[in-house]
Length: 551
Image 1 (cartoon, helix red, strand yellow):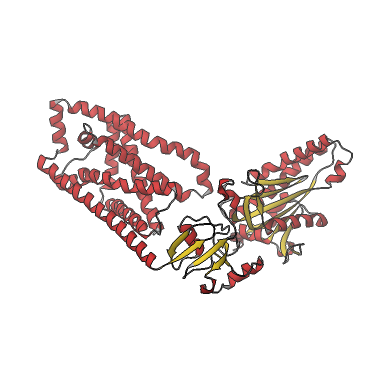
Image 2: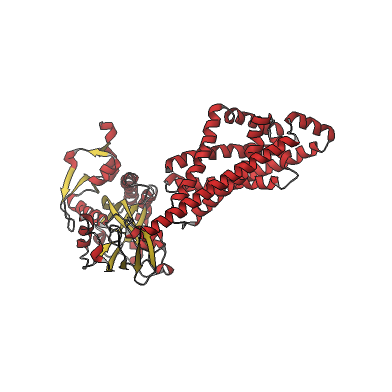
């Protein structure tokens, strides 16, 4: 259903965009405005075009009402609420527009050119209501497009420019409407020209106008009936859920009634109860766990996933995971982790689980190299070194999470694990090339070249603000950091610049010579980690091959 709403919405958004540009051409010349309208009608009035456009309109409206009727709660973010409200206001004005144009053309043979529409509205408040319709449609569409694409990397990069376009389009249309409206209304004031316009547009008679108004009123009543039916279905479903619901009381919190069959975490979210869940309800992080003070004997036993997670944190008796338990009888629960300290901390302090590539880098022989040097010389060398290599990280969308003396930890926070792994590999190769250039400068100055070691790994991480409230930098925690650090340490004994774990290669869709892979038993890591050894990081690409080329 979601894909159908997106597809139908895109059809309507494209239609609206060209409609607004068409109106805006009135700013330049009437012939341009009518020329583009003729081209649009060749598409819109074609049998296939009409089916696509009106089918998309009915489908989009119908699915929106179905979505509202199926909601468990009317609590929603402001942007979603605004989009819903705008979507419900649009049909009230759109019905009048469609009846006076397409319907009048098909039934009474009206020539519904832009001039006819403007003359029909210009002396009254109708022009402002139709202008408001234009604005509502545009804002509604822009919000929907942003909500759909906001998580993609390319969309985030284009947002500053798209905001300018989004502001320009309705302004351009309004300017064209006012310019053309003033011109054509001045012509219409001339009695001779008025008669020509009336004849050219096949102006409806008084009886025909009354028939059009009756159709408009009937169509609006149909919409109100559909909206009332939506509200009735929502209320009936809500009453049914209450009859098949369970009461949950939160210690130091409210008491709520929710539908049976939902997890406790879903109940919390549906009722606006703050409830920490870093892994998103997958039963891995245990931050949603609760202590069941009353009603524990009525709960189903923990699943293997839940039991394993609880054992990992040595949870006491009576502890359950809110994302795994589905209450069917009254409960009293205590949330172990309270996220409602949001008054003092931002949402980011709760953390977010991601699968990302992390790079651990360290300069070799730093202590011996800097012995006897002044602190200022040491700082100068380090800053020159980081100035040389860090751009290779940032160029791939990576960020340095922290500097640790002569080393650093970087992460590649991209849209998914595959793109993060690819970015990490490109950054490692880029660091190798940057180091070669930096060492050439050092040798020209008579200084010893710098040697480095890097470990690149991909795994599950938690990103969040860690530290005292208001003094907590955003950082990462997870086993992947430890693995990357241990791989970096192994490069010293091997005399290589880089070790890349097989998880990074797999995620990036790369293959290497199996003889170049070695298994490393790393301290603090339960299982051996296969990794590719790269003597010179700049040569990384020559040691790997995309899987599609092998196939």
